[in-house]
Image (cartoon, rainbow, N blue to C red; front, side):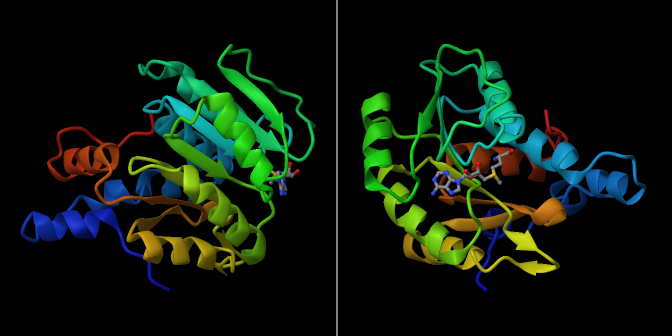
Length: 230
Ligand SMILES: C[S@@+](CC[C@H](N)C(=O)[O-])C[C@H]1O[C@@H](n2cnc3c(N)ncnc32)[C@H](O)[C@@H]1O
């Protein structure tokens, strides 16, 4: 499976200078899990990572909401802290089973099927054709569904959009759905990076020219600031 990392591209550009990989791979968080601090990886890695990404966003699409207390809460919390203007977040699910709903005037729930083109049209209408900074996908984790979703949703992404996927890694190996991410990464020549394999894994797909991702990694490489999920 072709998975490559922005850090490898940047290392090459920097003439082979190594990045502080212990920071990059979040050893601190892993060791906390190994010591069994009582928190699962969703709480220690996934949700803080979503907050971190959302803090730099203006417009987020979340696909697969369920009760709202997981990714909806994390993404909306981060977006609320973002300094960007014109904030917008659309959370999509087949049905409304939310027990937590963000009370932000720029947040809305959209009942719809992620594999239906009319859901994409609805999102385009609500957002007035804006390009999202983040699309988070956490629906049914099989190859066919994710392939269909990516075929539809890739039409509204821009060069700076970051796609985030839950459940890329299951039972000690790649979830077969990850092949659909890999195929889009090859098609667009984008980076498919594993953030963590813990708690069924979290992965992201982004353009290697993405300004936010490049700045973040360059800061890590130059040790300007330690890697922190906040
Ligand atoms: C794993 S749950 C999402 C969990 C949520 N992200 C969280 O952090 O708690 C998967 C959700 O995807 C939704 N879903 C599955 N297939 C879908 C589809 N085709 N369109 C929209 N939502 C879908 C399900 O209804 C379910 O609520």
